Structure formats: C-alpha cells, structure tokens
Image 1: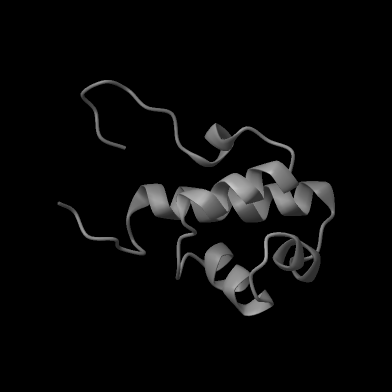
Image 2: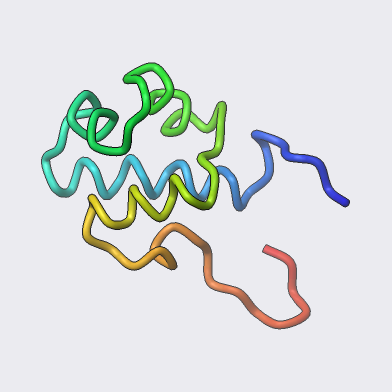
Amino acid sequence: MTRWSPNNPVNQYICKRIRKRRIELGINQTDLAHNIEVSYQQLQKYEAGKNTPSGAKIWLIACYLDVPITYFYPPTVVGVPY
C-alpha cells in the first residue's frame, strides 16, 4: 500500500483544483473554510498541498463549489499511472 505523500501528483492535483475553483468563483478562503467546516488554516494547508482532504471533505467542497467530485481528480488512462 502506498503511503500518503504531499508530493504525490494526484494529491497535488486535488489541492490545486480546490484553489483554482475557489478563485474562479471569487470565494475567499475564510468563507470556503467556514462552509466546509474546517479552520482557515486547514484550508490553507489543503490549497498548499501540505494536507489532502478526506473523500467526505472533497465531496463537501465539490457541493459548495458547484462542481462534480470528479473535477478534483485527474483523468485516468487504463494501465497508465498518473
């Protein structure tokens, strides 16, 4: 089993997409953090790629940012790792 790593490209992709969508919608970090029930500091860590949100938290983020949950994941190609 692979351990979580902040340098994992999928984790980095997820974190970048959270920030990208938040900015597209003009939502500040404080408002998003409040609406997904995390601290401002925790959201900063998500966006910086220092922590990756859980699957349930990604679902909440997707709901609030009005995108499908798949928005946060890179496309997959069978047999080819990201």
